[in-house]
Image (tube, rainbow over all chains, first blue to last red; front, side, top):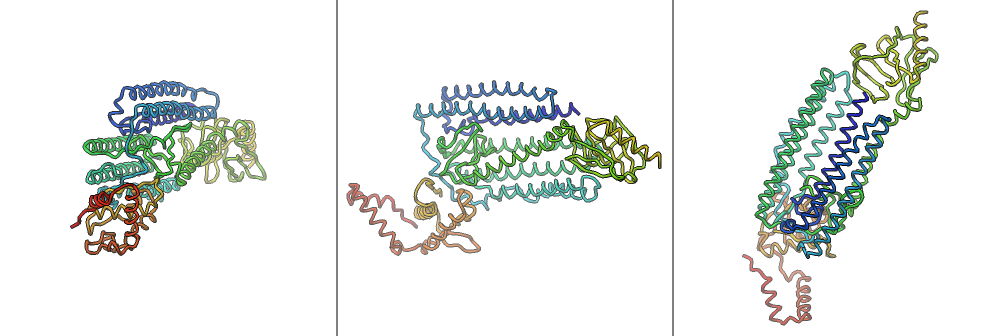
Length: 468
Length: 124
């Protein structure tokens, strides 16, 4: 269990590290004409001074991120389960704040260089050009047929059917399938409502590009929706039979889907670049509205009615316009969402660890012919007269959770063990022994976080049964 | 037809939108009878509220430049349906104001008439 927890923390750390590294390194990309959100022409980006500044930024970033990567070993220090959580949070904050400072400095230098060299971009965002011949209804005809979305819908329906006939995991699969379907529908609506963009002064090129954009977005969303549905369906089919097959299928679907999406996006990008290479592209100078704060890239433009603004990722990533009221709400919502997720993780993992350290994780006592198992995380009562036999065990053998909750410190809910079959568990894992109670209709695995109490209850129950 | 909107300007967006569409029709970039994008589509592309576009379309409709029907959506009116320039009392006032400004700016009558002549496009 300890190794598994360490592996999970390592993967989580690497995921965060990778996300931050990718986010910051892409800011220096010149492909979209605004490295570090400073608008430059193709010729200006070929200037040796610009190249040197960007190269220096990349070098510094790589050096910092190598240190962050090595610091990741901190999650392996076997102190307490709380330590890797705190360490990951601290390192994530460092991976955001320090690279932001480097980006801020490089951006300032780049803006200064642009001013010194007298490079001006004629168009300003306040004077926006919009192609009136772009109509959303006509452009939406380029999307793939909505009938294709029946494939993921079939997977979601299959999962719902499984949930109805399943004894275990019924609610969770039902919720997942419904949520998956709602998410898919929301994504389709989002693509349908996606606004058209005026790239250049050629109407035909604008129509083509917007059509390609909708086609690529709808195809990628179909691939992701199929993956989502297929994962739920495969998990539902194989979770109880063979967890290894279930895991393999999940990983397989994710890899195939991500590969397809990356290929589609690359194709769109290269077709777009090829088409725009022959056109006069509208360039807007928005340098004054972008900045790097300690929390990363920021966009504040009161003259831009857009709430979501494309950053230096070619449309893959968006930044919120903090000058708009809805932008502020969106940012607040994101922070709130992250705070809720963090609290949930803390409640799931850190709270049981804290309870365990305080000796309050699991308490058992017999009161008026009822065996009470109590914890701030669960509560159960087992009538002593229903108990037919009691066993004490220091090794439960192979088993897994089928419904309920479990961390490295406690388990509560339905489990399945090779030795005991389907059982109900209320246990503090780090405090052996466990008491196995064979009742009329159910088998319970319970214990107290004080082994002496577990032994005492075992003796009481056994003595009572012998007397019967 | 490309609209150019100045989001920093003190002129409301719906007025700018109305002016740009009239300019488009007058320059021939928008053909008579041509369909315009739906209110929601144009509002999304401009990233403005649907009400702003709706207001501009209503103004153009009331002035007789465009009309909306259920079957074809919003379309530019036919050549013969365009409003009479002098029927709009503001038109003459604005022209007079421009002429006065040109005179104050040092332009001669001939120079001003040349500017008007260059700006005027004969429509078929």
